[in-house]
Length: 262
Image (tube, rainbow, N blue to C red):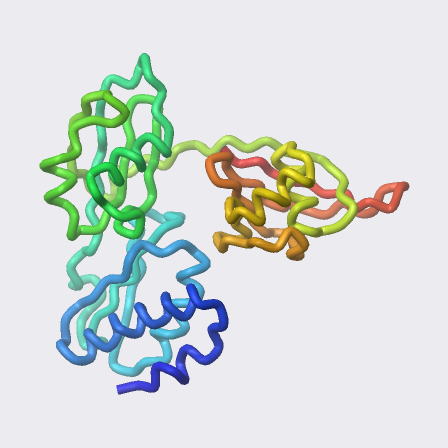
């Protein structure tokens, strides 16, 4: 059908090749059985790997499903090209979780932990949108029975689970803090330590311990180059966007505008 080795030839990182092989396996299933296939939920970095692979294969088409415009995690739904995209069955489900959260503020981590506590893998879970008195989750359609039958509490708070439509999704307001700083270089450890308020040595350790992502990809090299527009995330601590460069200071340091996103 197609030469997998040739299509994956440009991918050098082992995890990227594993992802590429997974994508091509889905494509092969579509071509062989003429049935729709869906990937796991992918982050933007993974989507950038997957889409060019799919686009090189004739007789198939795809669409992205994340639940709402701007969703970070999405599934790629792959189907025979003779099908109309709007008629292809949805491969995600969306639920609202209601509970008495007035006395116990729950975080993204709490809701994710409740889902994974049911034995669900992260790859089956899309975005989790947390509000003060409810949360909304996007999940793979295959796990709807588990969600509807077994998800009854989050961090000891009883909840009611209700399926909702895409039009009912409420995107939380993202809190931003502007940070004006200077750095000696555009190394990842230097920029990230300024954005998160840590020492450079501590940030270097976090990077080496795989706690830091640069543009959704785990980066283990503290000296990795950061560019304007890049997104840096530290596990459990939010994100920092490198917003703009404002020139060079009198001491020869690079002046940056960062945005801390929480």
